[in-house]
Image (cartoon, rainbow, N blue to C red; front, side):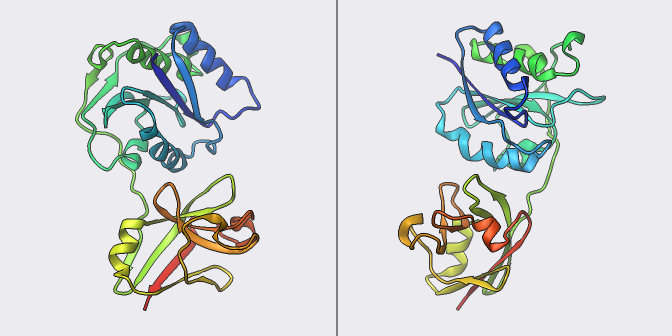
Length: 258
């Protein structure tokens, strides 16, 4: 059974995400629709990119990932379908793909599906839903678009390495209020070279030990670890790290090796 995943900023309060699912099932009754998240902050492209980047590879190859963030119809908007790492992605060409992918997609097509004016204010249920269902039914990506050679670019904020110091920042706060930084395990290991370290962040807080899991420290104690995303995160065991430690998006986290 074909799988279409949904990553949107539609939320659950309104009828919007239900309408999208109903439209997909109308177009392709046999499809398996799976939510990744509908709690992306409105129009927050970096947040959507982080969530989908860390989720898509758990799905089987051939899965279609429908992205409904900043997908409202407007002049000069470009909707695209592309193939990357054996998966298909359908959404607005608004920079999200440059934030998600480490390499160029295998194929990129600007969708040529004609906008139905009855769905002008909700293109997710028209152009993008039709494209996703076409791919889920086994249709070729070349049948619904025109090949293009480039995508809109956005730049991820990268950590800065200065001799024995890594300066990173918080890029995501999850539902457990863990503060996830842009310092990858790969970068941390390369700079560390088996040395001791101290992590500095707001309110003069420090951590000098990497944990393997959240329950390694007593409840209410702070810790840092490389979580499922393989990025350094600061947490409190069964607590609210973001709120209690004052760590929010774009706040600086500094690692000093000694």
